[in-house]
Length: 229
Image 1 (cartoon, rainbow, N blue to C red):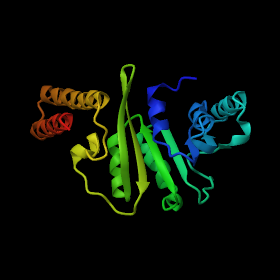
Image 2: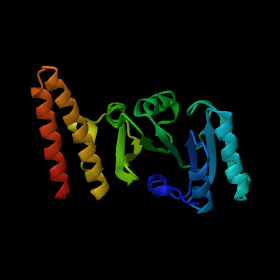
Image 3: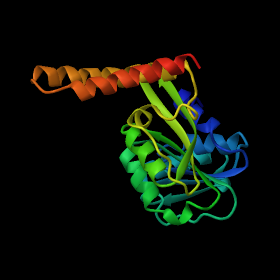
Image 4: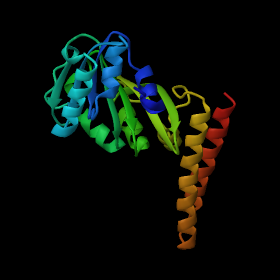
């Protein structure tokens, strides 16, 4: 079974020996592979819809791993129990705002031995800002290109200390946590291009773009600096 570059990178960030909680799992491929490869001892698989959850059950059953997983029809982390053993939570393929809302609904588990591996499809800047403003440390961040799409994957742990950040860091991540790679350069280029497109539209509409142009210049400068690391 091929996970693809995106999910393989997510898998690589999961701690060995942990219990994996895969939220919004759909087909269940990621948690199944984590258990099958012996990285995780067992899996908790959830989805908000019955159809995807049944597909997840089938994935585990076809691979002889039914006894290694529990399945819950639930919204986000709602109703899930977390023991004192190391638990890693993967939330992939959702918008950054939704991921932040899912985390915000379970403050009670933040101080447990829980690490979050998050892959936002949109609004990664919103998710980073939420994490830093609420006392999380982003330990690792990676960019992956798959086909014509680029993805951000980050690993976060609650530390209880708010982190200052700049607007540029909200969009590119803090350099200390980011992996320097070709895929990151591709993603940075796409972010800059999206702002340049926005700037062009504002110019045509006769709007003042001086602040936006300064921000684009700052993005480009930081992206170029990271290439030399």
